[in-house]
Length: 125
Image 1 (cartoon, helix red, strand yellow):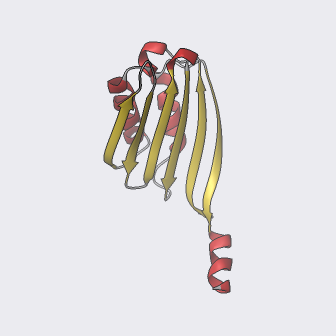
Image 2 (cartoon, one colour):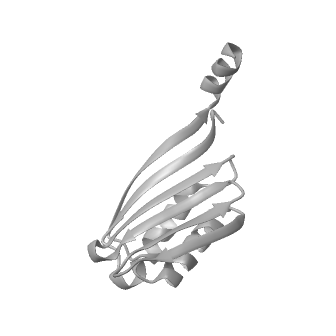
């Protein structure tokens, strides 16, 4: 592995209003997305906004999953950051696309903690 972690930034569009506005459903789907990806869930917290929207985070041993929803737009912004090679952040994103009844997802993966860069910094210290 050439990096310490993988961070997927997902834009999920065309989601069902009722799902994205239901704090219990969003919480359930986010926790299950972490499990689907092979992560070990530690803690989670979610908040329902008024008049609509949900934000939350699932802390996993391998890092975290975070979400903010705009139900009125059918949109969810999702971050999935995993460390190590055992957990696949794409599995979590694909699980959420299915559960949110999404029409489309665009996503970018960023390698975090590039080993080469860390080694260079350690030499310069």
